Length: 68
View 1 (tube, helix red, strand yellow):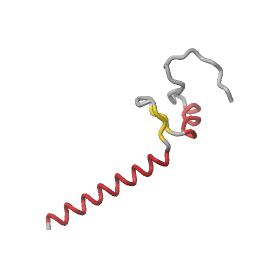
View 2: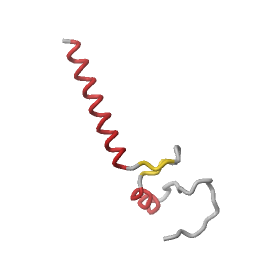
View 3: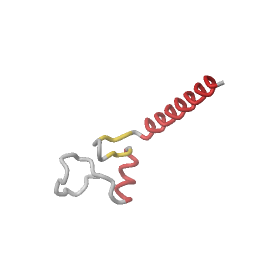
View 4: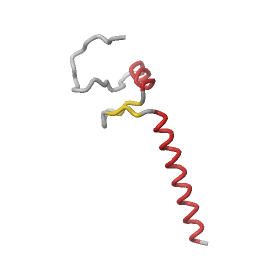
């Protein structure tokens, strides 16, 4: 549904999730990062997190093997 036209505070169409209602709306579309002005898909965020954890755990096991 079209939102009521407000005075543009920022040059972008994205609105920062200040209150829980706006946050819920933006979260369904994807997590909005006001700093980078991009919308991150939650799937990519979770996948990146898993890759990071695997990489860290792999690095720890490598370091343990070197010490022994």
